[in-house]
Length: 383
Image (tube, rainbow, N blue to C red; front, side, top):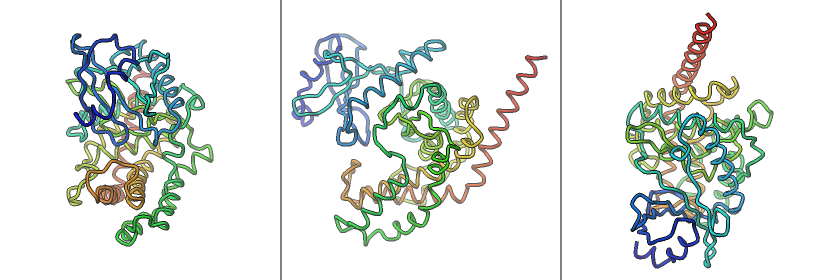
């Protein structure tokens, strides 16, 4: 922390936000890939804690639009949840600056934002049981459900083409051709695998452009550690809202499954350790569909399995692109980290392809079970 404290004048930065004043202890918090996060604890007022984030403005180039998105989304969620729950616990609260905005730019042109800190919550990098998986499905399904009446045009794409596989493949091909750090020759096996599937991975995008899949507001980064659970492992809050923007529901479903079904971390070195935890998949699907059955179309239901295959594929493309470009986007802990991540995602994709029919059947059967339950309940009420 000493090096970080020397890099930023935290006292001046914190003073720009409406925290109520006083002195704070500051510590690094979390393990995000993109932004730097710090927990700010009041020295004099027990339980008065905040999260301070330095926004990566090299990734998020339009900070004003980014924060406007967050304000739209959090306000809408709070308005909806106020009718059924506890919005102050279930939605992040943005802290205003003295200038009336929700972000502050310091003298070094760094951008900062602050939210409340939700006490007695926890997050997991790996799902360990079916209850957690089901709660994850409930969390992201409920998130989509609560936002399905907020028009996508109200939000700006904070990272244009973030989950556009055509764009990712174009970047990938450029990185292979440019070979800027002389790494292409060593990864031709991985390159060949990814390029062999390029055409088949465009289906969601094509269905969206054809109007078959509706554009909705989606989270677009549904790793399990973007959910806060309470001490009983019940869902409390969806976090990391930087990438909330227009998208397709299959993206959220697929990215969540990417982290939940994998028996190993996303950068696992031992590829044999990467297996599929089918009960966790089933748990997540059950939770997710229970929250989205009221609005999902048949075409969206069919697209969910496409998302399950697309997202690990896209993540492998992105990791390998970054590796070929010299590790300029993702934080890495060692020289071959992005390559190790790539290989792990490829292995996960292979396992998913092998089990595609089984996983598709789980989604379809759960959907039919929910439909039958709703139908039975309706008949009982009518009777």
